[in-house]
Length: 120
Image (cartoon, rainbow, N blue to C red; front, side, top):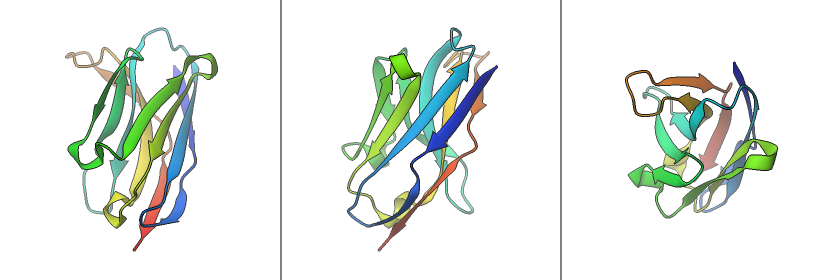
């Protein structure tokens, strides 16, 4: 079992920045990727950024150049630095820890989510 606790969400004006944190605990040995997903009202949850094996980062096209995912292995914490925020970034952001990433046996643990609201 893996437990994830997100923090750092809030209200920010367009053009501003926020940093989300996701503290992980539990059986992390089988976790191959950690990432951030988001869900806006009336929309499906979608990938924002994922860090695979702590090295390779993939981003959604809509956030490339503005968001950065990073990991502090000593703290078992993943971060999402969000700059140049836009109103369309408003969503609940979820942290995920993924086993067997990209395979048929893929399984994700999820955090409870943190609200990010960007005002225009």
